[in-house]
Image (tube, rainbow, N blue to C red; front, side):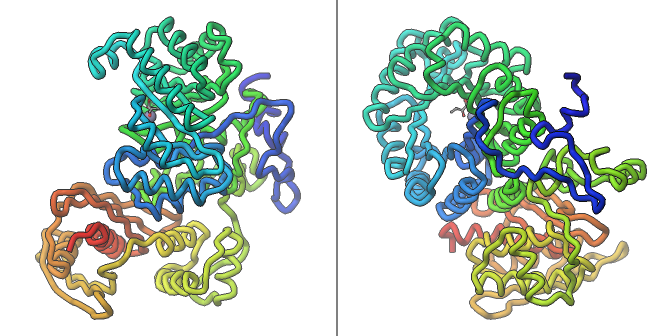
Length: 539
Ligand code: KIV
Ligand code: ZN
């Protein structure tokens, strides 16, 4: 079949047909296990490799919230953390292991006994625990980082797997920096680890050095040279330093990989990891090409992406595939004309298949509580009365300034309200006097313990004046390290999202704020960063 053959347009859905009222037939949200194609296991490492992003540290409650959402998304494995990295991470992984049902829960460990002991402490209460052990296999890592020879490293790998196996039936072994390792040595390590009891072998492209053809060939050659791989799950784990993490992972799937390690929104070390949503939707959209499928509930993708972005304070770029705010926006006249005639002309994925819904019911400031409740339910949010009150209040605040509230606006509002850090200070209001012939002057009111505190300050721009005001009120200074502003929803009156990284007391705290008014969004983000500082036990 040709690359652009019409039948391949959406392999999972079959050729798309459109009914008279514009709805597509064939609704395939969660794929049934197919006897025809291979199942690809989705191993999510947002809570481990993803969390290694500076400023994206999650607390226990936040990890649990994401893990529960990952279970709803239907991932096969959740790598919940690196338990020996800190006592807090150990507790966070334990909490996930005890409370999240469905996926395998994995904890990472270096190939040393102490790490493995702690990893087991962390995951032992999971329904399906896994210990994930890793050790470098490239000469660069062995000589320059570990300062040891190949044979003793191989011995260490085998002993570590055997040791982990005493605790746990399911042991994954990762040959760190596999893509830069000597092939014969890599085969020997893998063979020995399988013999020692590993149930999953992972072949990481740790530094994002591989190219798709080459990485695919590596996976194919490993399968040929190490027949024992047929007895275990062969996994891949790609980093995005050359922007090829997804392409490399897919090349590996084509060549026999059965598990893909990836993260929501592609967050992760340096340029990030392979993006879960891109891998899943590529396999689903081109299922016959890959002859493979996943069992991800794709309709949970958008919500998961928003939650991770908000809790980690990492905005999603607007043109990001699958989950970016422009991913389904058709702006050119020719494209809009095509879409109106038949969506399949310019659309290979239906927005609703990743959980973005189009609605006939328009939400405005005049919409009642019932309409809001109805839409929230449609979006899959089951809120308690108290949560609903908070969302309603914020909804009215935004709707006063924005003509229509879209589903994306609403999802953003809900996530802000549900994932708030404890608020030492709550943003109340601000006023600005600014112009090109005067020094901007701002007045800001925050609420602390029910009391309004107002102060005023000047700055070299209106946002700077607002930030100076906030610092005066909270009695702390901060150094702005990063500031980013973008529209998170569509239209002229879109919700603006401000993201700041602020150095306070020697550490970096990130903050996020949204509002139709960009200065207010910036103020909310700055207050949010200080609230994180105070929530961290700082007075
Ligand atoms: O990138 C990498 O090699 C890793 C391993 C620990 C799997 O994250
Ligand atoms: Zn990694």
